[in-house]
Amino acid sequence: MRVLVVGAGGVGSAAAGIAARHDFFERFVIADYDPARAARAVRDDRFVAARLDASQADAVTALCREHDITHVLNAVDPRFVMPVFEGALAAGADYLDMAMSLSQPHPDLPYAQTGVKLGDQQFAAAPDWEKAERLALVGIGVEPGLSDIFARYAADHLFSRIDEAGVRDGANLSVKGYDFAPSFSVWTTIEECLNPPVIWEKDRGWYTTEPFAEPEMFDFPGGIGPVECVHVEHEEVLLIPRWVDARKVTFKYGLGSEFIDVLKTLRKLGLDRTTPVRVGDQTVSPRDVVAAVLPDPATLGSKMTGKTCAGTLVTGLGKDGAPREVYLYHLVDNEWSMAEYGAQAVVWQTAVNPIIALDLLASGTWSGTGVLGPEAFDPVPFLDKLIEYGAPWGMREQ
Image 1: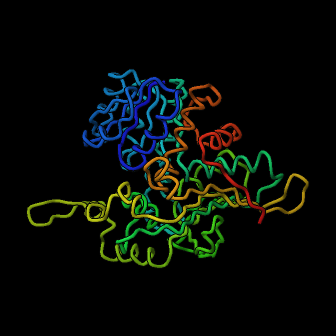
Image 2 (image 1 turned 30 degrees about the horizontal axis):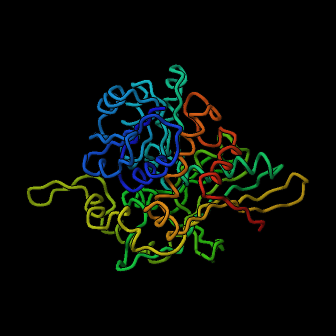
Image 3 (image 1 turned 120 degrees about the horizontal axis):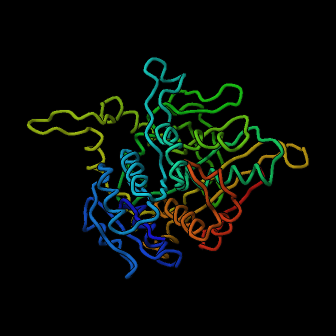
């Protein structure tokens, strides 16, 4: 296996650090627009740094061919999903990502009906991937990714009927010295939190609601405790119903009132927009400005304390036909991830999942063609590998 990782930010660098401890690959090329950042992610003589403009599909194809790449892991923000996705296919490589192609709200009823959904562009290209006998494994981070695998595990091993698969994400992370410092890409955070959230119901299909709708208090394990969670647009709601029989699928994020207030203010001021505006003799995107003035999440680990939890709350009937409610989850303590890998908890928790997927693909344990989500694969080998990689998962009966 010869891997190209596109993006040497927090997740890409963490992925390199995790992969370096394993031997399932021959070559690991780390590419970034900033070649110095790519060079800093190199771990040993199996690793190579390269410069790449991820907005150019032809450049992705050329770099794949230069290094005989078999698998492309996309670790840049969702703006670049399609050129990396298309570039990998043109090169005859398999593809993995942790966020899917961008959505576009319904032009007339954004808070009732879906427009272009997350991943629609990629799923439209599924016949091309099938014809080429290549695999695009989409949404294989932690959320989406591990949360989807939990839903498939619940369907296969715990439930005879799933009434709701509800992803619930929360943390008690704090960053010393910053009043506002997102632990993940702020560009992506703005995108997913301010777009209309999507909900799936079996008798209704996909529909949307207002951002931050239906707040609920959810008690997270590991000492995190109760956190208010709200509806947010996320890929799991678009992925899980394709492979898991559930009456309802939701995603709620524990943002906190202060974080929500900041996001609402950005929207009121138009600072969430991606369309460039003219400032003096320069043209800039307001959202890019916000991202530029906030700290790089990859640099926050040493200032961060607390834990992050990703999981899926499943309700329905157990295998015995009795009502059951289970929370399957994954916890990462920032102190542990920094001491063990030098990576902050959120980016490490995201990065470990595509590396495990690559390991399973290299061994042939997982295989497939077309555009597939994590739910399309047997979850047990993945969950076993998670334990092997030193990141055990948990299950709590509610």
